[in-house]
Image 1 (tube, rainbow, N blue to C red):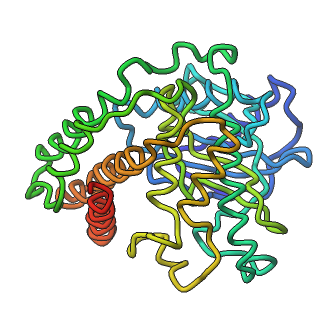
Image 2 (spheres, helix red, strand yellow; image 1 turned 60 degrees about the horizontal axis):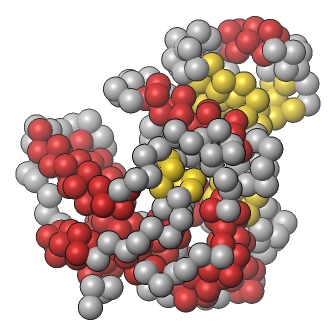
Length: 343
């Protein structure tokens, strides 16, 4: 199999130098993942690996994002966080000409594409999905990032205070894209003002995944247990409760937005309610959830602006117009949901 941007002979030689299996690569397949990176799964010496490298058309930060991801995964290798185990990292871009890394393949199912036949029909199992997800989120929150060598992985001081300005500037930067008419997001100014006026005290400084939602979670095919958290490119050191807010903003069931991936579950019952997810997280993370509404609104705000970026690029001909329309609709739905918390 030929995959543009992946030199399999170079991959084999790299693995040989590290005594990671032997012989040819087999069962090679390209994986559907995020729009930013290339993922390839293959087997060598009976072990299943996944290669992750930046997209063919590099952005300014592409290599550094992969470099940071590899560092984070290496730090988590010997913890009980269910992240893919890092096996090799080429942080100097010597193998493929870009930063890349190899990790173990996580045996699990991305349920955003549909629940498995084995347990997806059971409302109790759907409820357990949420409980398992927040349990693992709590495990992540309990990690000592300094002891793991991640003391300089982020800038936690003033993290919450920076968010509105940081992402407002990101949104404004889209205006430089030719053809983009500017953001048409009802509630943008109200949500921005509310967030700026309601910044809570930081609950705890710790590792943040940064994009914790169903599309980045893998569940076992035999039971509703979280088997892996993937796509760590937005990870940093900050307030772990941001991840809980992200999950609440995107979770199916009660109060779910009605467009985007969660739509596939709108006809199903049994998903844990936001109140149940919050209580379960508080129990396992041993953190106060007094200000959880702030984190949910922040997640709606931040994720909505990120998705609007693809809509802006679609106007400029740099992304599919249909995808841009869908992501803009999700952005509007997220801000609509955020407005329900302001009172």
